[in-house]
Length: 121
Image (cartoon, rainbow, N blue to C red; front, side):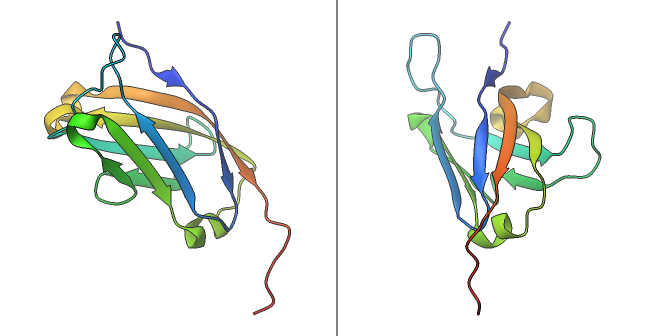
């Protein structure tokens, strides 16, 4: 039985967030993500109905096909607008784009590192 990996992340307020990972199998070989889609939600609590941020294969998540790479990105403008102290996320992969075959790849806590220096423009 597959269980989601645990990985905590820190988002710096006002800075572009980028995270690059590679999905590998038990032999450390890249998993082919061709024809897959992905989604990641960030919420203040796991039970919360409101979403702080959503990344998808269409916006914020780039899947690298046979290389198994997954690149996550949130713009500096979007991180500047965030207002939370701690939150939770999970990253799901949908083989063939089918949510019925969901792989919950990663989960963890999200910390927002508050910006101190602010421009006066």
